[in-house]
Length: 69
Image (cartoon, rainbow, N blue to C red; front, side):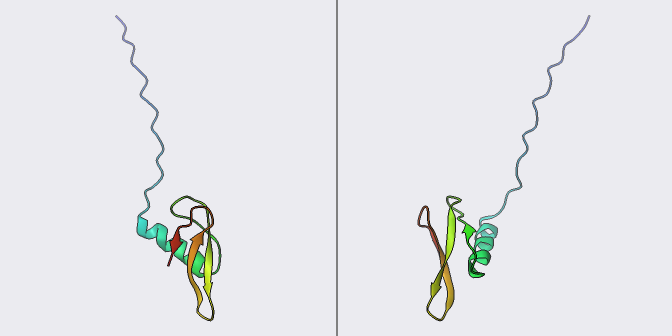
């Protein structure tokens, strides 16, 4: 008597989960340094928003319009 065993399903590789706070913090750090960042909503490009004399005051996504202040 022989038995045939089913091959186990391959394990899905899941990316480590990142908290919303970490995503926003990383995005803010890039924008505050004057560099574009990946939008946390749509993955578009978020550019820094500058204020007269105050430096960077936030960011705005050129694709979806999300703002970070």
